Amino acid sequence: MTGSSPDLIEAREVSKIYRSEDSAVKALASVDLSVRQGELIVLVGPSGCGKTTLLLILAGLESATRGRVFFSGRELDGPRREIGLVLQDYGLFPWKTVRCNIELGLVIRREPIDSDKVDAMLEELDIADKADLFPQQLSGGQKQRVAIGRALILNPQLLLLDEPFAALDTLTRERLQDLVLDVCRSRGLGMVMVSHNIPEAVRLGEKIVVMTGQPGRITRIIENPMARNTDYRASDQFYNMTRILRRELEGGNA
Amino acid sequence: MRKYFQYILTLAGLLIVWQIVSMIIGSYALPGPVTVLQKLADDARSFQYWRHIGTSVYRITAALAIAFVMAVPLGLFLGMSPRTDRLAKPLIYLSYPIPKIVLLPIVLLIFGLGDMGKIVMLAMILFFQLLITTRDAARGVSREARYSLFSLGGTKRHLFRHVVWPSCLPAVFTSLRIATGTVVAVLFFVESISTRYGMGFYILDAWGRADIPQIFAGMISLAVLGVILYESFDFMERIFCRWNRI
Image 1: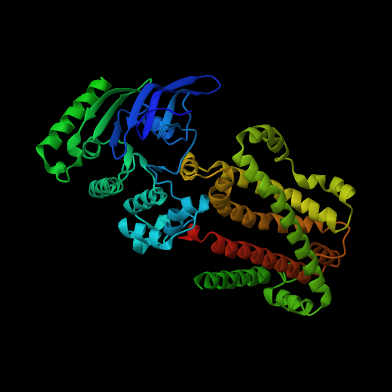
Image 2: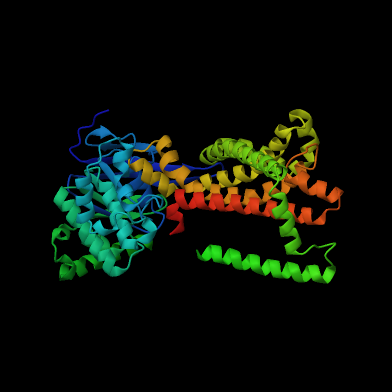
């Protein structure tokens, strides 16, 4: 089925119910969300509000119980190469070297491996000297760079990130936030990131989508156009926006 | 290198303790290491001794190969398919605790008194160890690993090749290493019945003739066989699971 949306990805009236033998949990209720090419969106909200579920539905890895998702106007029926996914625990395979992890998408899709392209990717992500190491020989930040490289090697148009920097220290986290911004800007990628971290949401999200739980819903979308500015983190507007977002989240939890 | 040094050191310690105990309880009941090693060196010059060794190695290798070929693919399949695993679980849990060795008369009746009956008995015992370890390892593949692979466009076939199989390999090697101990112990038992070759027969024959040094020579031979098997699997794991040793 073909829709008429000009959006890169669009979730329409998406609901998700997880059923087991003796219970049913409503994870999402009638969620509408759209992401345009190059748009950076961060999903925030309390634990269990369905952020990750929504992200997995946008990735084509989980199906919606009701509602539909469209990617470039076509109904999404599974994972696509134009959608890259980065997970909190990196999702790297410990039996593959950094290079093999990055090349895996090409191997799976039986595409020729362009060594120069892989080398350039390793260089861009500042892990060129780690190419022949295994993931367990890397720091958390380096692992996440590999996970980002693995998603980018397939030239996606949309990058989905599920709390990618949650386990990292503050400085590494900020460096990687800048890296993600650079990558998205230089390639014109759309981005949807799940985050629990208020400053991170304000730094990265041009739109900050606030969700509440039981069942998961979008309660507010905060426009944050300043997120494009490189020196935003040091500005007064940044702290004002973190206060606004905190108040919004505390209100949602109350 | 350090590992081999530790082996030599342990061996030297054992020989010293053995010699001391032998002197305390008398060399008839427990001949000293020099007597036993002398007996082993004498026997090792005979074709007959190597025929015993060769027969045991053949039975062990065949049993390990049969158990591996049957249990590992089945374990991977059950681990990857929860529905089939649920159906198979009662059968596995009911049959696993049964001491398979009591089935020896039936196995020998069905598969004959020759090599095949003994190999099948050994393979049956190893089968469950390998099956359960492999199945549990395959079950342990995380949801995140699956999401990662599927998000790259992977199918179930890719999941098996790039995730399930490599993640299960260390567990398979561990179960093979554990199996070496079991297989050598059971070998002694199955080779005590209707055979004229194998290390089990070599030891029992010595017992019948009250040739105590030969009993110990047989025990040492079985121990060395166990160590060689164990180290072989360890070596293979170092090659195929290099990532797991970092």
